[in-house]
Image 1 (tube, rainbow, N blue to C red):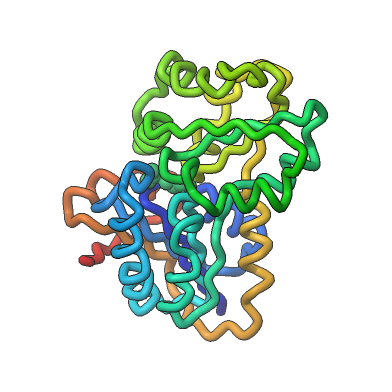
Image 2: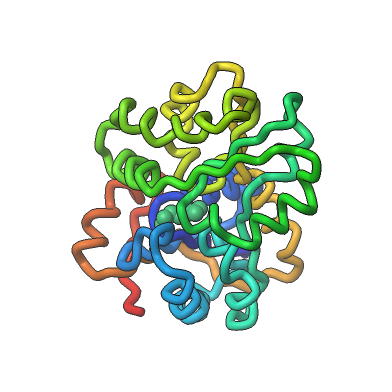
Length: 262
Ligand code: DGL
């Protein structure tokens, strides 16, 4: 039996959990949402550096997965190495799909939609240098889109005007109108893909990392030892967050919800 634990600040990682279930239908895919500390995109680097390795070590102790998937760009681009040093199972991260975007663009102009935290990461500079040399990369960080996605999955209607307002600045710089590929560099964004697509010019392609992360998770598990049992969703922040997350978890097939205190 193979178990994976997919971790995010909120509901965004459910897109990765879905991709993993498609890639490995026989696996049990547990989920953890750090709802008590959501959203990550506006937290300082220090706050996240202090919390993430500790939280992930606790989650891995409780869930005992064969692989831990950090289904969060904001966390992965800051703390992946640190988390790996604290967790005794393979850890797979989620980072912006700059390489496939660079291969896909015809105009040479790529847009990146992410959290305010991810857009200022040195990790992103490195990815650009390595995989998008000679291309123009325009970044837009939006905490508003994260919030819209989180609320949509919990059952609220999507306000298309708010989405358009959040996306528009990506296309405002002089090269903005030439963007033909937009990287959804936050796992929350594929949850509102249609609304984001409607806010972009029709010629723009949207890409994300769900399937690539799922494939990598399958690749790194070589000797599964986890025990069988129903998939569990873990949540931080107490009973109020458990109640708030319940509709989102139910939509993605999670009925057993456990509170973790970190
Ligand atoms: N889903 C997360 C990401 O991929 C972050 C959302 C947030 O907590 O701000 O970046």
